[in-house]
Amino acid sequence: MLYICPPILSKKIEKDMLIIPVKEGENIERAIKRYKKKFDKTKVMRHLRSRREFVKPSIVNRQGRIKAAYLQRRASAEI
Image (tube, rainbow, N blue to C red; front, side):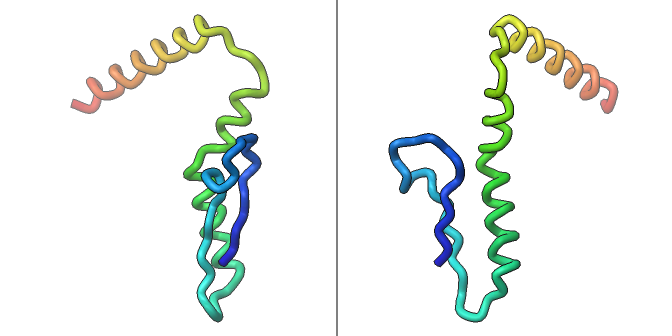
């Protein structure tokens, strides 16, 4: 078994660990590829990048409204 812990600052290490079972004779490159896919699904890097700088709540709300309007226009154009 391959145990790799992502860079999350947490008190509960067991909860944050990614466990990648490696079978006997399995290529390590394939196990690393599975780890990378699993790590991407946890969205840890996206969370860390978003926390680099503070964004005011009003800006977050405005961006959400702009995105919702864009998605609504796009959905109505497809119909």
